[in-house]
Each structure stands twice: as structure tokens, then as C-alpha cells.
Amino acid sequence: MKACSSSRLTRACAILALFFGAHGFLHAADPLTLKQVVDLALAHSTASAASGADQQRAFASLHEARNQYLPQFLLGSGLGASWGYPLSLEGAAPSLVNLTAQSALINPALRDFIRAARADYQASAAQSKDQRNQVIQDTAIAYAELTKWRNLSTYLQQQFEDAGKAEQAAAQRVQEGVDNPTLKTKARLNTARLRLRLTQANGSIDVLKRHLSQLTGLATAAFDNMDAPPALPEVRQEEDLSAKAMAASPAAEAAQIRATAYSLRARGEHRSMLPSVDFAAQYALLATYNNYDKFFQPNSFQRHNATLGVAIRFPFLNPAQHAHAQAADAEAVKAKSDAIAARNQVSEETLRLQRSVEQLSAAQQVAELESQLAQTNLESLQIRLNSGSGAFADVADAQQQVNERYLSLQDMKFELEKSRIMLLRATGELENWVGK
Image 1 (cartoon, helix red, strand yellow):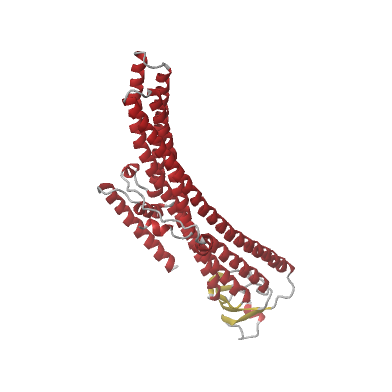
Image 2 (spheres, helix red, strand yellow):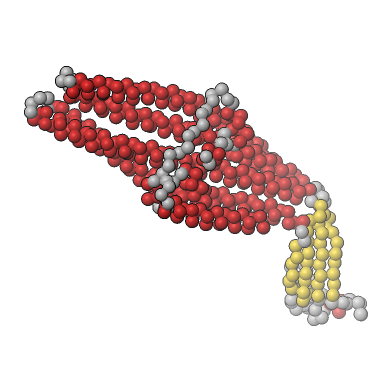
């Protein structure tokens, strides 16, 4: 339990340090970095706190099992009047003071239960690590998405202002009879579309700022000044990342350790039908008014009495315990199957992410070329319009296509970034990337 107290103190100190550091962030001119945001999210996370509580519970369960080898003392009294021979009260003779002590000495089942409790504690530690990685991943993805929407908002705001000017120009050309009235409607439609996109971007920014605020405990205004996330490492498709992920996955490790715990617990249930030896001791201070002197030989009664020895048990027929052990065997088989399924899931998910990164990289290249082509087409039409050989409507349509290609490219970049972040978590490299 000292270890748990020390961990709580360390966690409290870390929260205080991050709290004062957060105030430093708010008052400093330097922008927030991803590492700072992740550190605050880890200290403030309710999921991490719940995972830490589960680990502490497993630690206490381990000590509960181990402490059965230590004597358990019970001090009490069995006061009562006697008529005739002094009968027992709850299994003990009537006494003024009664002190009992009991502990396990030789117990094969208890040894396996202790090993199972230790495995449960190790599994909870691995689960806490997996939960920590989940918090880091959620924070990093939200941070990257907020960066994306903030950049898009700036772009859309500029395009919206340009669209307003283009709408006025279109209205003037229609009024002068240069172009068809449909041009005015198209210009208004383009402005309305950009207003919709800008509203969506600003709404997403507000939602993500609130989400990060809840994750970190910072005010939403603190995320108005953010640094760009660090560059993501390249993914080599020829590398066997599935094997690397299975070796680094805390979830797969926790499932495997849990399966070991179930096997140990099942073996302990079978060993509960083996002989066991317990230490036992008792002291009693008897009263003189319980008729002891009437049923013992003269001068043979004494008030102070003590017994010290061992209790030996030889179970030889216990159908209920046998059935309980069989049920524990079934749970152990299920836990082993769950561990295999967890490893397979990690392997398949990592391979899917690895191939998804490859596909999204190719899709991003296509989106970049389409965006460049649309921009080149727009510049060409603008040159023709300025020279008097182009149509205003063609320029407006080309500008709309540039906007659509640009937005599609940004969405593709974010999806690729998201997949690469998830792949970093799968291979156990996410925290190292965040710390850069």
C-alpha cells in the first residue's frame, strides 16, 4: 500500500506542476504545443483516473491474498449467564476476554490464488498503459483536426470575401446587360456555399476547442494560439508492423496476462480439494460465575486458558467445489481464446492501418495534382478574361472548382494524418512522437 500512496503523491505533484504550467501557457506569448496539451490531458483525464483506480484495486486484492499467511487476531468477549453446564456462545466458551489468532501455513490453493492476483495486477498495469495511449491518441487527433479547421477557416474567410466582391461584379455586369441574369444567381450560390463551409469550419473549431478544454482543463481561449503538430514519421510498407504491434500492444499483453490469471485461478480451485494446514491459537479469561467450578474437579479450574496448534484439513468429498473448479476451467479456456482474438485483432488492425496509409498517400497525391490543375486552369481563365477573350462565368466556375479541390485535399491530408497517428499508437511509438 505504500507504493500506492507514493503513486498518488506523485500524481498529485504532477497535476499541480501541470496546473501552474498551464497558467504559464495562458500568460506566455509562446503558442501551445502538442506535448503540453497531451501532458495536461493525461493529468486531467477521467479515464486515466478510473484506470488508476482499477490498478489500485488489483494491488489491494493482491495484498489481501498474500496477507492470509499473516496471523489475523481477533479480540472479543463472550459474556453471558450459565445454568447448568456452561455451553458455548458462537463456538467459544463464555469468557471475559477471548483472543484468537489464525493464519495459513500450507495451502496449495492459496499459492495459486496469490499468483493469479499478481497476474491481475500486472494486467491492470498493462490496461492502464493502453488507456494512457488512448488518451494521447484522442488528444493528438483532436489537436490535428483543430489545426486543420483553423487553417481552412482562414482560407474560407478570404474566399468568402472574394466571393462577395465577385457577386457585386456579377450583379453589375448583369445590370449593364453584359451577361445573362443566371450569372448573378450562380455568384450568389457560390457565396452561399462558402458561407455554409465557413459556418461549418467555425462550428467545428468551437466543438474541438471545447473538447480539448474538457480533456486538459484549460479555458477554450487557450487554444487560440497553437503550434503546428510535429512532422509524422514516414511509413515503410515493406516493414512488418503487425509483428511489431503485437509485441508492443498493451491490450494484447493485458489479455494474455489475464488468461494466465484465469488459468492459475482454475488450478487453485482444483487444489482447494487438497489437504491444507492452518496455524491457530486462542486465549480465554474465564469468569467464576459460569459454573465452571461445579463441573471440574476441586482445585482444577483455572481462569487463564490458552491453546496453540495447527488445524489440518483433508477434503475428500466436495461435489460443489469440484463443479466450481470445472466452471473455472471453462473461464480459463475462454480467457485464452480472448487473448488469441486480441492478438489477431491487433495484427489485423495494424495491417489495415498500414495499407490505409499507403492508399491515403496515393489519394493525397491525386488530390494535390487535381488542386494544382484546377489552380492552373483558373489562372489561365483569368488571363483570358483580363485580355478580353474569356468569360466571367468560366472564371467563377473555375474558382469554385479550385475551392472544392482545395477542401478535398485538406480532408485527405487529415485522414492520412489520422491514420498515421493511429498506426503510431499500434506500434508503440505514439508517445515518442508527441514528445518531439
